[in-house]
Length: 159
Image (cartoon, rainbow, N blue to C red; front, top):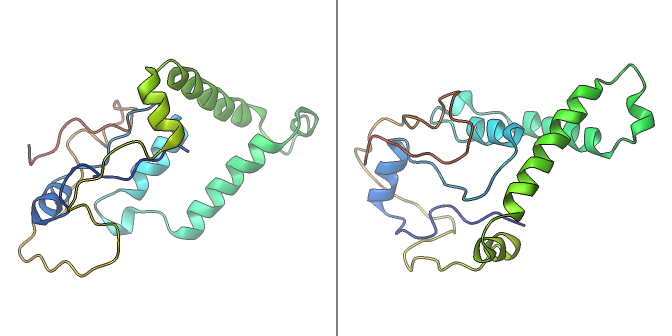
């Protein structure tokens, strides 16, 4: 389990809401397989109509699971493209290798997923946030750039 709660180190207030509207996206300090990055970026799109529906996400995840769980003999069947399985496995293996070479404190954070401190005003329960006059949502300046193949957004308009 390597998922760390987004924005855990800042107050969940109007300032964070504005930064998110200006393109701030969660950071992941680990290597994530590119196929996962693509799906995550789609889910975080500023424009709701561009985000995948739940059924589409379920279908994608189910296909990935099926590809990874098939035996090699099943891939000989011409119904499946073996290169799809190979690419997914290659990306996962590459991410695992990179993540295993991280400093031990990073690995500990990744494996436990809870070794970080949460800001006292970071609230992860449903609540009404009545912020008037938020800017029009936009995607970050570099997060959706095809050349940026990692999940870490370095720039957003609010910086």
